[in-house]
Each structure stands twice: as structure tokens, then as C-alpha cells.
Length: 222
Ligand code: SF4
Ligand code: SF4
Image 1 (tube, rainbow, N blue to C red):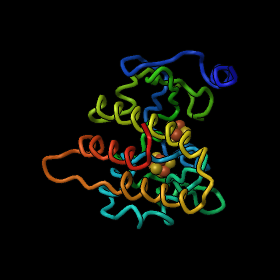
Image 2: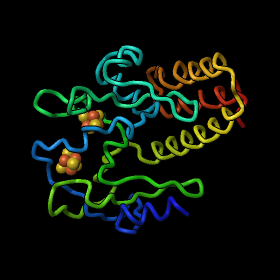
Image 3: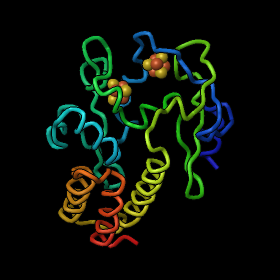
Image 4: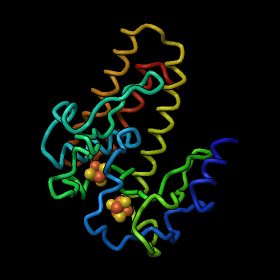
């Protein structure tokens, strides 16, 4: 049970839910941006993260690709990650003053820090990454307040569905050897899941829940 051992090593050994209280409140980061540097491999973006950032910035997904986000291939799946820049490997969304320009719409993984997420039995809980935030004397705060995610239940449902989809896709792609086919599958995902348009009267989650079954069907995923 390697993963559980690792979790025990890096956390305080507890799992937290949204209503729990946890010692993560920095009470303001005072110009620190440690958790925004050298995290390129860690912050994989979901369709919701990208939807939020492109709407906030008024640009398209493919305009951000290459400049602020980049594709990384993992288990044959190409997904967008935050792009780090310059020698200090600073996140591309940091401005000259070291502030996040999409702070109110930052990716979910950024919102969590120094919490992390652990998946089990079609659900997830949060764990505290001990010692990763340099700020001393972190205060108690409710997980809910720390995350500040609107429509939490819809967001959680989406994250679980997406997680399940990526797991199923990983299994499906194990058997695909043809590079062209892999390229096409990855393009279908980027074009359909990361370029979501939401019309008036709709919201991201309702649109996404209609798109995902069609993509699964197209890719032969149950
Ligand atoms: S490392 Fe801690 S103090 Fe620094 S920006 Fe991240 S959460 Fe704030
Ligand atoms: S998106 Fe914002 S919060 Fe997340 S790593 Fe980049 S600068 Fe930091």
C-alpha cells in the first residue's frame, strides 16, 4: 500500500471533509508565492479550470495554450497544465508583483494548497500537506471557507465524473498503439471538453454533463 504510506509521510495523518476545520489559514500570504513556482507538473487543469480562466481573461483555450498553459502527456493522454516560465519557474499567471492575475478564478488545485485531494470509493477527501507552506502558525479555518468554491456540490460532482473519465480513458488508451489514433482521441478531448461554450440560462456543469456522455460514446468508454 505504497500510496497510503506516502500519504502518511506527507500529511498529518487525517482526512478532512468540506465541513471540517483544518489548520491552513495563512491569514494572507504577504507577497509569498512559493506555491506558484515550480508546480508545472502538479497542476493539471480540468475543463472547469480552463472554462473559468478563459472567460475571466476573455481569450480562447488555444490562445492560452503555449503562452500560459501547456500540454503534457501522461499515460498517452495530453492534458493542459500550468506553464512555468523563466529560470525561477514562476507560473505564467503571476504578474510582476508576484500576484496571480486569475486569483478569483484560479484552478481548483491552487485553491486547495496546502490541502491535497485523495480519491477513494467514488469519493474524495482532503489531506493536509504538512510543512509545504512556509508561513508559520497557520490558523484553523473550515475547509469550505478555505476553498471558496461556488456551487460546491456541482463542482464536486464534476470533479468526480472527470476523475472517473480520465481513469477509464487511461485504461482504454493502454490498447491503442497507433500514434495518429492517439492524436485524434486527444484532439477530441481538447476540442470538446476544454472549449466549452455556455449560453445564457445554462451553466458549465449542465453543459458539461451533456457533453461527457457523447464523448464517452464516441471514444467507446463505458
Ligand atoms: S506557500 Fe503558503 S504563504 Fe506562500 S503563497 Fe502558498 S499558501 Fe500562501
Ligand atoms: S494559477 Fe495563480 S494561484 Fe495557481 S499557481 Fe499560477 S499564479 Fe499561483
